[in-house]
Image (cartoon, rainbow, N blue to C red; front, side, top):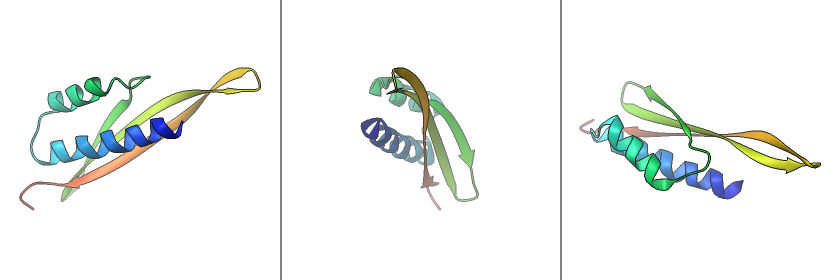
Length: 84
């Protein structure tokens, strides 16, 4: 699970920086698909006064007492908008 979280941190930071420098959401989708994370993370964009934030979330299945339980993993990274 920790490796999934680290992958989300890295991807959220890279995606937020790409959006802040003016890349399109299609570029963001390509970044996410290229990482091939399983399951595919859900994305949410948050626009603030001087920054753009990218929130990525996944439900990771963990084996607990013979059952698989969904455990939510969420990461939010922000980048300052270019030119500000």
